[in-house]
Length: 116
Length: 112
Image 1 (cartoon, one colour):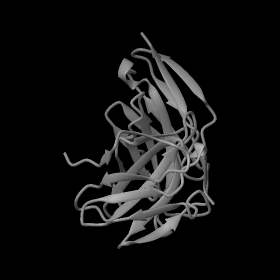
Image 2 (image 1 turned 90 degrees about the vertical axis):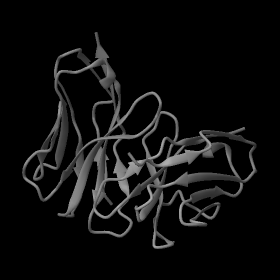
Image 3 (image 1 turned 120 degrees about the vertical axis):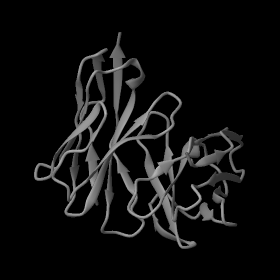
Image 4 (image 1 turned 90 degrees about the horizontal axis):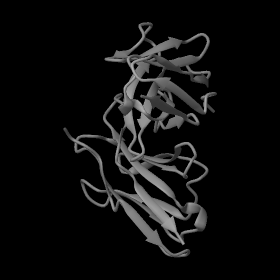
């Protein structure tokens, strides 16, 4: 079974600075997706960014980018020019493309605080 | 922009009672999911549903849980006899093809 690990329960960053959240995963599959979801205090799950494993290019969405290292099974999220609205819990998630159903497997989450 | 909706937003029930949580997935999506999140913990997969049947379920999804798509729009999760440990946020999600899953706002279930 796949596992996702986020080793940083809490992170903090100054407004306008850059922060990187770490995620590692374990899988024997070659075709899969990786995601970062943001969960603000409202507890809504909001997709931040996704990465297809077959793509070598790292995904980017405005101030959010990933560093995808397939061989190392690492998938970190970089937030540039941090804003107060970025404060939330961030979850890394894995989804197989090789099994039916294609559940999301989540990490434990990283609580990000943005200091003004 | 289309979105997944869930009702109610908060449900309080007594232990042993049955509850039905309702979801309306995005209209052209084909895959439907239920997840739960106990307060302070990670999001856990419960069940996936495709072509009017369960395609995958987790060990959490035991005989007290069931899912149904009673019509062309609703997707429901029933808990037959609630326990205190069922208190959690329940999220519905849907997707189309290889796309990402879109989550609803969640239903907070409190079992007293």
